[in-house]
Image (tube, rainbow, N blue to C red; front, side, top):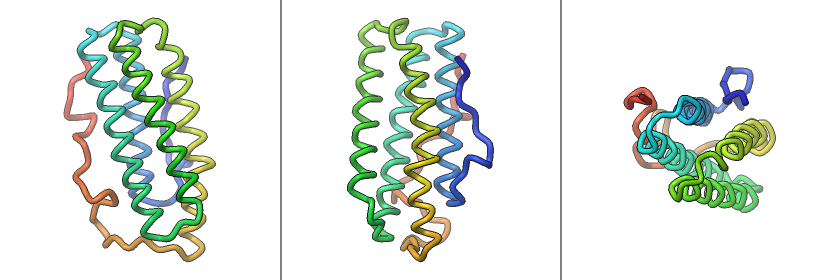
Length: 159
């Protein structure tokens, strides 16, 4: 199964969020690679944790942007995020309990399909809202989530 990749045509034309989407695609691809090439369980667990934590960071950024711009679909979008976080934590916990072979395919189908559909459908609604007059209240260059981003994928080894 192919790992997700990112190209700029998948973007929603919201710079900060597109950068975070790119990072999510990179982290999911990294997880795919460490699981595929049978790295140590500790390494896989570390990358899986990074996917979970970065997803939480990204969702917090999106949710703040939606609140700051009075996005009308905020509650539904947040519910989608909450469901995704729960599902990710559940998959990670199953892996931690020794379910690696059983979840490998499920993880990648879920993450790949979610990333594509969430960006193309749900996040596109945020972009349309912004283009139709919603404006973020955060100053340029500041973090949408109000907290520093987790360390980048390039700061760790996947071996």
